[in-house]
Image (cartoon, rainbow, N blue to C red; front, side, top):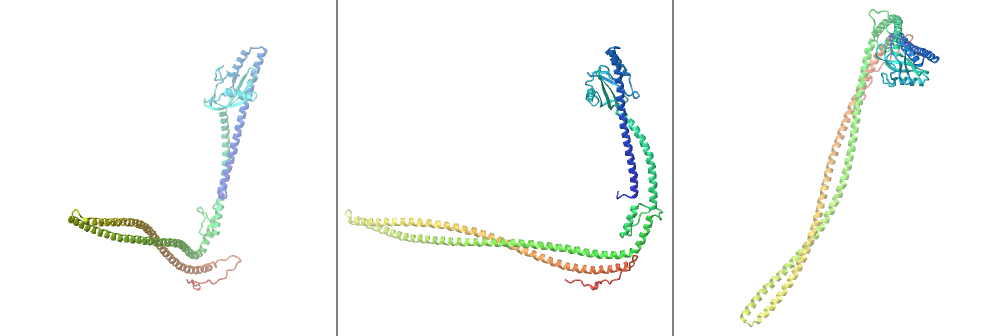
Length: 536
């Protein structure tokens, strides 16, 4: 409600009055419906009591002997068929404890009713008996039944009471639609009365709202809002006025705003100049802040580069240590290879010596063989001369045997030398294999050393690149510093101009005074020339 205008509040009050009257009328009508329903139920009970009294009279005649039981029941049945109430709409139905029909306007006599169901499938007459027995002989039961007038299923409430002497259940019902019809008739009358009273109230409230609107020229809250805007310095605001309105409160406020607007116009121009100078300072400060952020980002990047550079240098140191270890291993392998090669040389020298001895022995064998050939030739000659008497042949033969013996000994020596040479050759072969393995290890170590040297070279390149980035970042920070210095100079000049505009604004404000307050003393404002911009 705080945001509504006075007119809206008055209309809201009228609407609330209408709503209250409608609620009261609806409540009264609903109460009336309840009263009507209670009256219909009471009437059903009264009519059922009349029927029970009539049955009691007939039963008394039967007991006195005036008629037998069957004749009395037939007589009572005929009386019930003819009984009507509520302008013929109300009737009675009767059935016994065995659920056989005794009297009903539409159901034949002696029709079994135990399995009879209503529109909703409820075992209707069993429900009547259960409700009456549970309530001590009489009770109301709700169900749906075809209306006698329209034939359509309608909600119905029946009152059933037990006639104990004959075991008959007597009942009559009330249609809820009949009660609703009476309710709507009553509601229509209440609505007509409500429209008459509400119409008069609406006409009176409309007249009051119109007179209030003419005297104020608008809503009081709207007028107060316009005054608040003017008090806040918005002299360009103009209230909305009706055509030809020049005497209302809003019209007076509009004239006041126009006069104040002309007086303060020049002040607004000066204030605009001050605002522009302030905006210039703000822009300079914003740019200075942005460049400072960039400088901070450059410093952060420099720090990150330095961290990477440190990591790279550490890695180079580790690689250098590994290279040093590998170099030591290579040196040890080289020394071992040298020792193996010396052993190979010794073995080869022994093989050479053995080979020399073998050559000398071979020469001896050749000489022996030569002499053997000569002796054999001489023996042949002597044998030829002597014929059968060849004494020289025996001498020659013995000599040949000695030469043969020496040849055998030389052959044994050659065999031994050859065997020793074979062993030495085998040992030399093993030494050569070991030397080859050592050389292979040297080659593998040299390959790893080459890889480490490559990594050291790559790390050195990264170090060079990082140093270049540091140089670039430092150059950018230097440029930013120079620009920031220029911005500071511009900010100082803008501050000087702002001082001049403030002085002019003060001079304009000297035209205004309040009652009882003297004019403010004039102060000399600092000039732009009195302040030198800082030099960086």
